[in-house]
Length: 409
Image 1 (cartoon, rainbow, N blue to C red):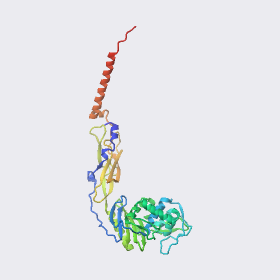
Image 2 (cartoon, rainbow, N blue to C red):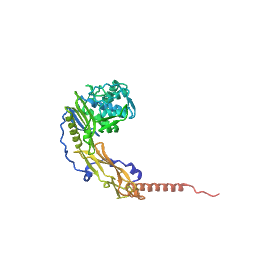
Image 3 (cartoon, rainbow, N blue to C red):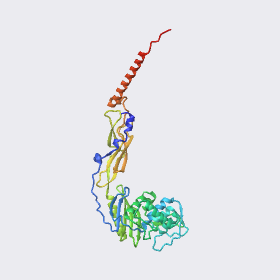
Image 4 (cartoon, rainbow, N blue to C red):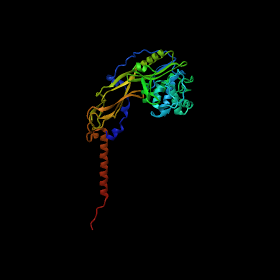
């Protein structure tokens, strides 16, 4: 095969999915789940795969309920989208009741957006939420309009807001919508880092303040990574959680729990169950060939392809992942050993779970001169060339015979 023909076939048929059992020796067996299915003590609950949005367990997930201070997640999203971290915002004259969560902002006090975000998410400060709303949209009423508009853009069909704080009864959403909003927020590194802190020091404003995370699970359980608590008499106890383990990340929502204790326990049960739905499998060992390809122009010669550090993937229990080899049908030389020629992917449907480069395990020699002539296609080309040459020679001779002999004078 000529080099141009080989390049034309690159990433063609071999890019098709290869069943995972082709790599069965490297695969761990499917294990049964160890954590029993929980029964959350709440009006509604859900736990989802944070990366794919796949629902792992749901109970009343589409019912609309009051959401209390988890309202502040949308407040945080608008701040992250519309203000720079070091942008200075001026505090409004919000009059918080004694029972409200606040950091005691004075009218005219100037704080950076990053500090207001921290106070909003850790201390659930209502005065921080009011300050954000006024500075971002010009007024609280305009900010609420922006909150509802953004919810509609994100497809949060069960969500509506009446204030940026969470005290209004008409702040309502569903467990499914809150999980979707949280998944989006966790893709923001600044948000994810903030909600995973047990406490933080605010360094702007008229005085230094230290705020603690009202989500006590973050400090008590290392696998928990936030996200937001809430409580009003109407909403009861609300908690959105996130957890990581076994290479997986899940998001849980508990709405309307009867107590803080039951809210926390239901959240832990959901997170543990969600993470237990995944397992780690080894798809390829470091340096061990996972495929072989023929060398272009060298009959019978093949080269092994391996991943330099091996490859593991996090997959759902009960599912066997598929692998895809993204590499040419034939390898062109010359190449030294260890040269990257493609990729090995682990997939769950259309989603790539993990991938690693494919390297040659040995040197790839250059194609032999005229090697293509030994193939059927090469012989056909050679025969055609001989026929064309014979026709040219015959034509030239015929023309010479018809040409009159020159005479001398």
